[in-house]
Amino acid sequence: MLKDITIGQYFPGNSVVHRLDPRFKIIITGVLIAMLFSADSFIGLGVGVIFLLISFLLSQIPFKLMLKSLKPIVPIILFTSVLNIFFLEGVTIFKLGFLKITVEGLRTSAFMIIRIIALIMGSSLLTYTTSPITLTDAIERLLSPLKKIKLPVHELAMMMTIALRFIPTLIEETDKIMSAQKARGADMESGSLLQRAKALTPILIPLFVSAFRRAEELALAMECRCYQGGDGRTRLRQLHSSGADYFALGLSIVFFDLVLLLNCLMG
Image (cartoon, rainbow, N blue to C red; front, side):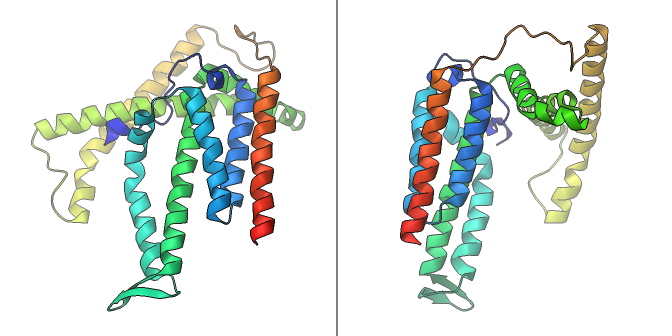
């Protein structure tokens, strides 16, 4: 299951989405999230899903990869679905004791499943098509107006990107520690919930030690290279916007306006 988590990974490519300005990609991702949360009907949500599918096809990211990344959130989706199906009031379809399935429960459950999957796919597409370095530069540029109120914009952008970058590394480290503990006879899959929680202790302690060690090594490496961010720092690749960036942003706004229009017409 841990190997299926692809959050924070970058997959190099030369697609239309890969070549977009990362600043615009961050803004478009925000528009997509607002689009999905604003939709209050299946038709409006379908508009957001269509925009996401178009973006996904243009990115040329294998669809199997996206399905693989959705596996870790299956328990969350199932838990949310059960709560909505059995505990929402409405027109009853089936009843067994205190449990009952309603039309409203099925509708809400399907709506939430589609929304959660679309949110995960949309946010993952940003990291799949944007390298950590360019993502850092983009976040710093977008937050640059906050420098006027003395906020450490560069440090904030660097911390966010490093945290995102180290997610795959920590997942791989966790998998190695779990395999090593199982080889020593550790049982993490049987027993009560409390026993399983206690069985995680031999995993968490080495994981925290490894994380702190990696953080110290990274800090020493940056100091040895005399790294200084912020003002005066030069960049190998400068960010430049093009007509394709404005077209993509305009297209996302058109889809967002269409969702709002559908909400008004169907509300």
